Amino acid sequence: MKKNALGILLAVFCLAMLAAAPESSSDHPQFTAKNELMAPADYRQWVFLSSGLGMSYSPQGADHPMFTNVFVPQWAYNEFLKSGKWPDHSMFVVEDRGSETKGSINHGGRFQTDRMGMAVEVKDEARFPDKWAYFGFNGDAQTSSAAPKQVCWQCHEDHAAVEHTFVQFYPTLKPVAQKFGTYKASREQVQ
Amino acid sequence: MKKNALGILLAVFCLAMLAAAPESSSDHPQFTAKNELMAPADYRQWVFLSSGLGMSYSPQGADHPMFTNVFVPQWAYNEFLKSGKWPDHSMFVVEDRGSETKGSINHGGRFQTDRMGMAVEVKDEARFPDKWAYFGFNGDAQTSSAAPKQVCWQCHEDHAAVEHTFVQFYPTLKPVAQKFGTYKASREQVQ
Image 1 (cartoon, rainbow over the protein chains, first blue to last red):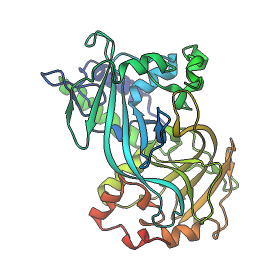
Image 2 (image 1 turned 180 degrees about the vertical axis):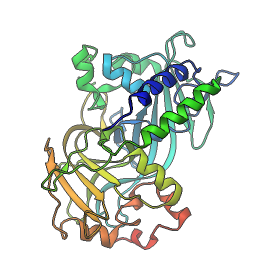
Image 3 (image 1 turned 30 degrees about the vertical axis):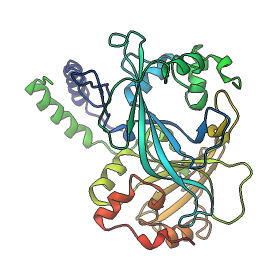
């Protein structure tokens, strides 16, 4: 690829200037004056970590299995690749979608349909005494208050394989965390 | 957000210079001298379209359901948002992953595990007389020759809702195609 040397010098200069601009993009957590998280707008263009179907954390089955798509912003993902650790202000979206089986040429299994809502996890060491906080958004809700500790935080604390994230379910991240020694293998044991 | 006006002018200049560089990134199709497609390297960082589980196009069931994750590069996705049409050189990756059910805190449903391979669809009006071509990559294969027409092409021609893409299974793209009148609703009928 041909590149003009002057162009490279100018690009470096531009990046240095832009790096000085404060964070305001929707891929960093944004809060209202009442400390509610604002729904991140473009999470579907973040890095996809994995999708599950009908995942249930208690023995009963699910009649209407939902797909759960997980995304993380590119900037946070890039940091994780270098260290196996999540930088401060990382956000994770778990998007819930309905599923159908009979449709068009599909005769078995399930494909995704309507968005039902999402949950967002935020790491913010200065804002939250417990470092991590969890926010549920039903339907098209645009703001959400942090959930009480026992609703989400405690299970993440007790069962997540990397800090508060369930990397045991993210097959592209697991080898990265293992390489850096940040993966708690005991968290894979059937609970 | 504070931005220096000089920085903006320089950024515009840099972008103009970089735009002149020829395509060589892995988010455009790359071919060997024998016209084999080279496996795109960073497709997991492309835009996620959807994931299905155990999708089967004939009535028999699947004992070992696979997840199928679909990705398209950001540049092609951006064009689709503006027109409901896919630009020339669009690529689509369908990644196949194994699934498990009993693991860690999960008691029901399924989560994703090992990558088994992928299929790649390419739109290239100059290179392919039939405009679209299909490439299978088992395991970690790095090159692949185009599949014969009856293996993939014909079904896409007969059943896809937008050009040769199954937008009936991509819930975030369907409303875009409907808005621009490029969505063939008849393709939703159960076959």
